[in-house]
Image (cartoon, rainbow, N blue to C red; front, side):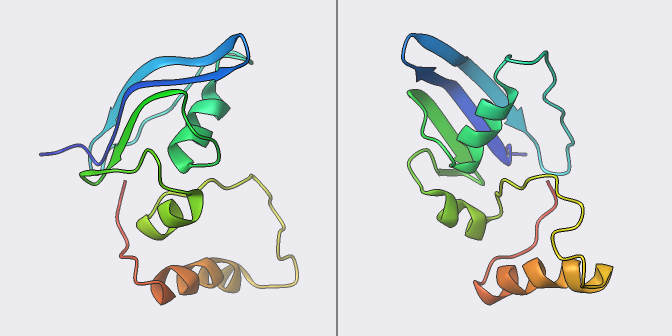
Length: 117
């Protein structure tokens, strides 16, 4: 079985600071992983790289067999990768069903297929 997500030598520099240093990571379909570490370890930067919020200084990101390293975030969202913030009441006036249905409609409208990570 092929990994769903792989990073190879993924790095990100901010001036003289290397926030992410040659990370090799893989995630198999159906697998659940956690990225843990102390404040300042580069966890958010790593997830931002995978989601396309920022570009890597070096390395490669492969998702579902395709190199997505240089794809913008909006294209990655259509393929099933998104960065979300932990906001508990973004649409407080909507029901739980409506809060879940709204992003699902956007995903279906753009032809993305659902996948389990």
